[in-house]
Length: 385
Image 1 (cartoon, rainbow, N blue to C red):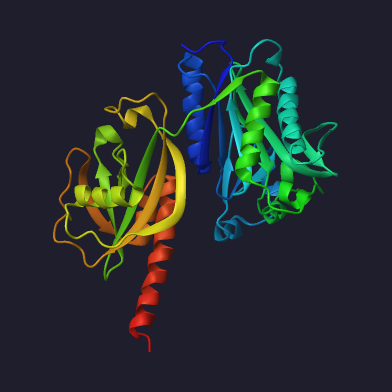
Image 2: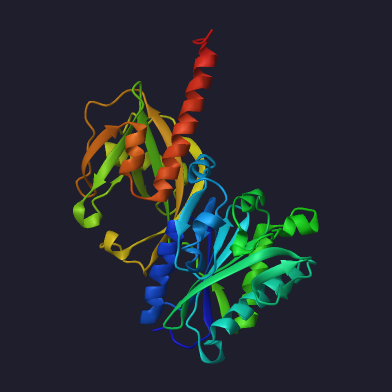
């Protein structure tokens, strides 16, 4: 049982879909309440997303300045969440930190906790020559009158969730689509904008970890990703349908592409080839794989891995690939230990059938990548001439 030992588990997760970040937080919070894990901080980036906090639930239509249809065209999701605060934006290049802490003693004061988070950010920025400050009555951190970091938290039984977002090297233009933090006229800035040069994201993460430990009197230790996995999106030619498998009911019963864990000593491409062979039976027919520009982390709920003896929650980093089958095989050889049925479905149907945000993003990238490769192939063969 983890108790008041002052340890802080650090999980450096990389890219995480927003809904996956919510699940990771909830699972870690549950384990922290049971005393099964120590205080934890999750460090990550989100794909483009606008989040609406509790204080903006009734005002979102006035604080989001762009039609939802246009946001979808821009690839920006909108999510209602249970953190404090108003509307904000997250995107790649922004460092998001979610502390899941059992607050104790003098820490059990929400306003004091917010000030401590601000102090962590201010000290981190100082390491990069940036003089930052607070503004009275406004939660967050500011530089030269512009906001560089936002804070929104949730507490339950004095265990924290959500946290802070520090603009390191992110595109600031999406903030023009909202009223940031509900503050009309506020301008956002970033570390790279203030410094006028490249700022190492990894170095900022490391600095924030050190200052978080000092400010909160915790001893950080890095807890690595629990498992690495692969996802392979297979599309059949010439009808451009995607192969999906249905998991056994006791393992979730949802539809998914080829997926599987990477074995010790195995590279992601080798694992992808092996998983295609094992899940389809196409042992001698695995087509050339194309690595997708998408590696993300997520948590697997304990009920979906009843046979896996790993500490909970299990956090996985997934590498994604796409490939085209020369034609729909006559029969896919299912592994009955994992799946009960399979189907080749059109792209739009595949998007609606899969349940996870990461799978949908991988499908979209696979469609774009395979279509581009198909055009290039036709041009090379002179088919369009």
